[in-house]
Image 1: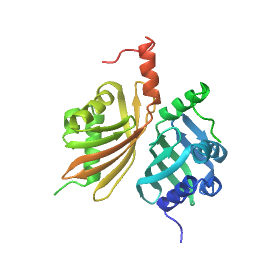
Image 2 (image 1 turned 90 degrees about the horizontal axis):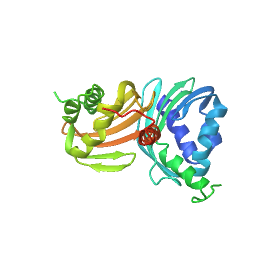
Image 3 (image 1 turned 90 degrees about the vertical axis):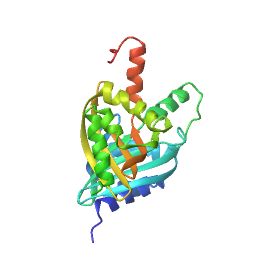
Image 4 (image 1 turned 120 degrees about the vertical axis):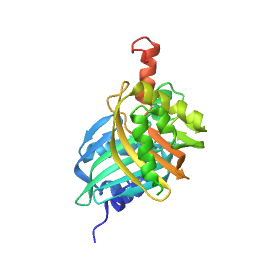
Length: 129
Length: 129
């Protein structure tokens, strides 16, 4: 039995929000295209580098707000508690092919992360692991 | 026949992205709660003031990316072309009661809008209508 796009999106989501980046990346295609707030990233390695700081440095916990899907696509929204922001919600619209994420439109507010970086640069925020 | 939460969310979306703010607000409950990137806003007047600059000043055009719903909730993602940013996608998770939006979790990237405001303040960006 193959998993639905929604099941794959949620498995990916649960893995990275459990800080298991390796398990999360198993759901991502080698030639994935990621449309992130800062622009388009291409390929699994760029996707991993995008996700790593959220999974390994910023994330405290995540909570799913809503999740839907059809035969090709899943759309999820969740809130995260992060070190830069007590509430940093995000939404992802992923397209699935052959059981893997081939495209992700990833929406979140960069502003608290940008402000945190600025405070770090000024020595006013803690260095993260 | 009553409209589904998804139909209501899409009608609201089409109205404000057509710059018809009055029509859009007809789908919003008086005591709506809006969880926006900058924090929680309460009441239809605060919602209108939040939406107005996007609808009346920033928006060039909008394009729906995905839209789903169930008996109580709709989740939509769309891209917008705006004056501050060529691509400013957003996601909204709305809860509907008695045919109106009573809660909206609204996710978008504030950074390009913040940077535009800074350029405006420095006299480097155009004044908007």
